[in-house]
Length: 324
Image (cartoon, rainbow, N blue to C red; front, side, top):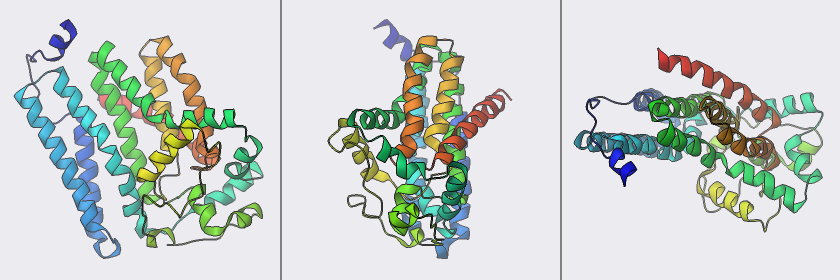
């Protein structure tokens, strides 16, 4: 009861404007809105995209008004949680926006062959096909949300003075990733391999699909345009992954892997929190997630490696931006 009372205690100096992370979201909203208007005739679902931005604006305004009525830690939490919840709208929206650009998977698949001498996304799950291994790496992949949400909750409860900074770095990392996804349309192996044929990929043939993916219409309940998820089909985490994929996966956001980059950001923040138990508790999941990205064919291995680099850059740059 004492902690709940602290959560609901009215702040002495309530903030009148938007939180830094809300300003980031608004900047992204306005910038992509200009992009939509500039490419209006080339985008098939402009009404849907305007609806996404309207919903984001209404949620942000409603939570800001709630905070103004009761300025306290709890309503600050709700404002930031609201922005995290909106990521479920912003992610598939990148596919709608990058429709105006030709697909680049043939380039990335060629690089994959050049660097590794094979396609890790094609052979990894075939070589390591054991049910226990499949469930482990799939568990790592689906631990993505619990990782960054868990770090955020830890900061809210035990490092509240750094909570807004930590969530600013996490959420801004998402938006920076989304900007890359818009201008670098890479669908990933699960879509590209399906489109060109696994037999061509195995033979080292990587056709240029141009605007193939931009012309598709996706039924989220019947994802026929992607390969079936590899691994242990009867596993619990396999079913969890199937559910999340069917709910909102699109041929977008492969390079760099935002799963990896945001996890790297979360791990840096876990270390910065000075709670080593938190860091070492999450570390095995982070490692499994890295390998899970190309085990389940969501990414090329170079996407995961690029995610390590981009995550480190996001953490250090955004930490300095927030201080400024």
